[in-house]
Each structure stands twice: as structure tokens, then as C-alpha cells.
Length: 351
Image (tube, rainbow, N blue to C red; front, side, top):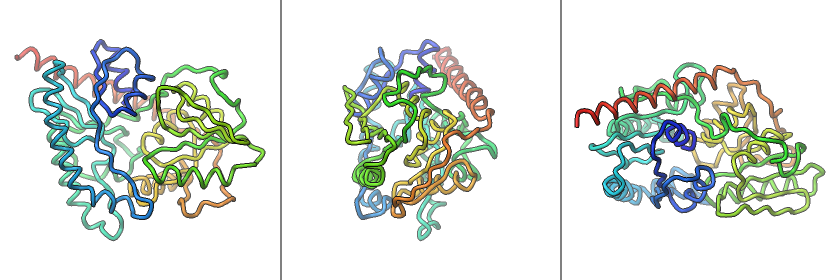
């Protein structure tokens, strides 16, 4: 959401950021001078032994309750702050009939495990009903064959309010300098993401492989807070969080990169022209599909978490992505935001 917020702020809009405390801390560091509202989203949670889809299934009643709750809370926030456009990231309840609302998702098709793949069509219908509640649905991807999300957003019938807006990355156009890199340019980078316990499980596995090796390793924990904390143990540096400019330097200065196959991470790596070894979160079907899809295209390599051992083979970091990916992304985003802005202006003129 950072590039969207920056783009709207730069065109003269007054921006409010609504999120849970952990994400608000992150946004305060990245986007200063805005208005911040405590508005936490649904936390699906993971299990150390159950597949993620089963863990989520058991929490479905809580999800439905949260959707209803956040829908009515949004009404109050809109009235108290005179908000006229709401853009939300995969939050099912943040639509409103009185203002323009935008739903951002990269997977109109939510992938099911093979055993339950026959239910995917039902999921498409339900998700399409959610998307239709909003003024627009923005998909952060390209519309043609040169795409990153595969069947998650291509080859399915989409509502007329869907707009492809290209890849979103907080690193696009971000200036940086070599002195921002805390460890020079001769290291491996591990990028952690997602909730516990799988985040810690992966960290322990990879730490066991790299600990005591000659190569230096930087672990980006992905735990934003009010302060940056760096802990060195032998050849391993763990950072709870770094500013985007420093993260960019750490990533682009790497000898090799290991990361989860979350979509945001994938978009950011592509914007930096970097390849990585993708390790999907076990049982998270979206990440498993993306890792498989992108490795088949030759854009990344992948390995399952259970197959991690001391013989990890990391791809060369520099990838050579087609330059039209970034250029098309810029044009698509500008076009979508212009349409959103023009519709809001027309709405204001008729009131």
C-alpha cells in the first residue's frame, strides 16, 4: 500500500492510514506526516502442525464476525474524518455506498488444495461477490501473458470494476547509497515474513545451515517497531526492521537471497531486478502455487520447507527482468488512479 499512498499524497490528497499497531509503526517510519488510525485487520494465524487452509477454516466464524465489525467501524471512521475514498488491502468488509471504495487483491481465484480443488469455483463466485461491493477492484499485476500471479488473477471471469494496476513496490524510484548497507556487499540475505510459528521454524532451519560458515548472513525479520534492533551472532546479523532504503541496499548487495513466496515480496524483488530461492509457507496454497508458477517460468527457484538441508543452491541474484514490466506498471497505475480521481470529482460535482 506504500506506493499507492505515496502516489495519492503526491497528487495533493490528504492520506489516512488505518492498520493494527504493528503495521502502524511500520507506516509511521515509511510515510511520515500522515494521519494514523488504529484499525487492525483479521489475523488468520498459522498452526505448527495443521495446513494453513484448515487453520483458516476453523477460524471462519471469527473471520465473518470481523468482516461485519470492520464494515460498521469504517462507517464511523468515514463520518469522523470526512473521508471520500477508501482503499483497502484484501479486507472484505471495507466497502461503503456513500464513498468510493477500492478493494486490492492479487488473487480473485483463491487456490484450494488438490483434494478440495473442485470447490475453487464456489470460492471464485463468493470472491467475485465481494469485489462487486466496491467501486473498483485493483489487481497489482499486468493483464497479459507477462504476469506474476498466473491463474490467481488470469483466466477467470472478472467483474467490470476490475483494473490491473501493474506491480506495486515501495522500492520503485527509491534513491539509496552504499553507506546505507550495514554489512557491505558480500553477504546472503534471508527475508522472513508471515505469522508465527512458521516464521520462527524457517529461521531456525536456515540459521542452522548458515551458522559458523565463512559467509555473512543478514536476516530481515520483518518485525517493524519504534526502533531498529540488530543482533549479531557469529556470522549472522538479525535485524527486526530496517528503513526501505537500507532494505534495498541489503537485497541488491546480496550474493544470494532466500525468502517466502509472498506476493508483495515477489513484486519488490522484481522491481529490484533480483532473483531468489522461494520457500513457501507450508500449507499456504497461494504461496505454494506462486513458487511453483514462477519457478516454472524460470524467474525464481523454489524448494519446500521440509526439503531444506545443508545443500541449498541459490540462484544468481541479478535476473534481467524485461524492462517493460516496470514501465507498464507505472502507466497502468497512473491510469487507474486517474479514473478513480475523475469519478470522485464527478461525484462531488453532482452532490
